[in-house]
Amino acid sequence: MAIIFACAALFSLSAAPPVRAQSAPIRLVALGDSLSAGYGLPNEAAFPMALERALKAKGYNVEVANAGVSGDTASGGLDRIDWSVPDGTDGVILELGANDMLRGLDPSVPRKAIETIVERLKARNIPVMLAGMVASRNLGPDYAQKFDQLYPDIAKKHGLVLYPFFLDGVAGDASLNLQDGLHPTAKGIEIIVARILPTVETFLATLKR
Image 1 (cartoon, rainbow, N blue to C red):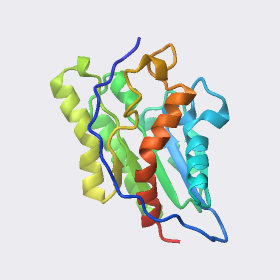
Image 2: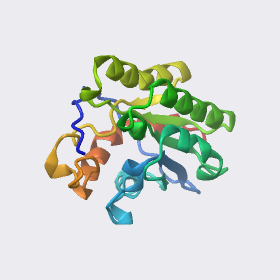
Image 3: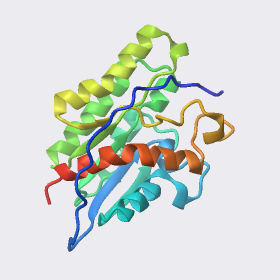
């Protein structure tokens, strides 16, 4: 059943200069659910590959691994964190929580799981960029407030670069989503990438090589 997301406010972040002339690429992992995995799309149209192309077009030497698993909750992502994010990873783009919300799970559940993922990656000296989600408003204002707030709270507590709403500019637009109304088309992914790109560049500028 299609869920229509409320629009999130746009955030503008200054882009950092491209990282050039590296002997080895920056190795990023997109750890997420079907939104990262590219549900219903060919591999080359999925978010990680589209982001990698956009970054390379701007001069970055980067590889973005697809560690998205369709249907994954935040707890599911936590369960597979050790093998989904290999040693040598330079940074993780963490996109989880949408399935928790769609299942109506108490927001405290994804909050705990996402924060634990962040803590475990930080313990391995792997920086995290957090991609947030916005709750469907038909779940009620109390649920929406608690769910929406977990992302900025975790980002603030752990000093993370935050992109507030992964589906910004795409959610609720039938022309940019598959027939289920939940998953972006290839065009929708391109819009997501264009909007998130400045925040990813800000994140790249924080990485220590």
